[in-house]
Length: 303
Image 1 (tube, rainbow, N blue to C red):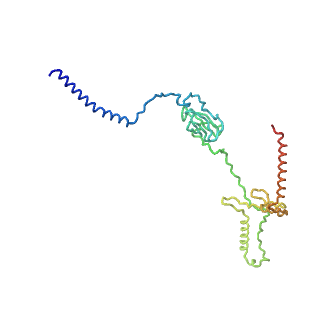
Image 2 (cartoon, helix red, strand yellow):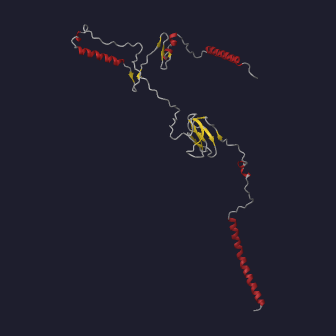
Image 3 (cartoon, one colour):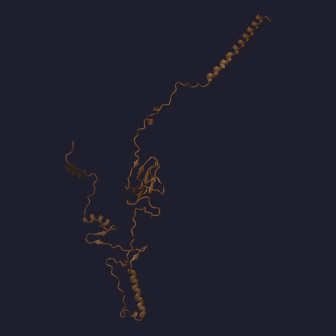
């Protein structure tokens, strides 16, 4: 086949292929366009911000803040009460000893009333320093393990004194006269003449025993003697001793004092303007006198 024909056929096939592709290309471009329109827009990065130390505010500025006020708040042998802060620290430079405790921020505070002591305790730790509270200023810490335990009630140990034996005498009220021992008179009681001597002696003993029993003081459940409280009065004044050992008039007598003195109360008359005017005038006069007396005591006022 001559080359001219080959070239012509080749051109025809190329043209046909171009026509086919030209017919399909618009549809593919339209699909791509529709997909681009329906899909969400992608954010575009306009600028880049780099991390900066100063961009976070004043909190990250230079560390020139004031001190935390750390250190000892109570010196040695200084008196403290429960809750007093003894030492502020960061970390455990000092450890809580006897009658002390440590807070959440390593603050050592007292748990008992006493005196501050700084000491070491080789029995617990060879290098640690402790802060404790002693109940007495002369007491030394640490307390030996076999020493007597100190009381924590603020009391001192003193020797007990045995009370001396005291003979109890029956307490008699003022103006009390004991009853005499009954005496059997044979000439006045003829019926008792017939009684034997033993019966009469027994009757007299029973009467004496009853009299002694009546004269004995009454006792409470705990065995203490109940002393009846006599009523004392001051003659001529109408004063009575009260429960707090004070002489005063009773409320009833105080309420009847005006009645006894014959004081008459003026009845209240509604609408009496003349009486109201007199009371107002007297009140104003008293107020002016008080103000005048106050100005005299105070002196001249400063301008």
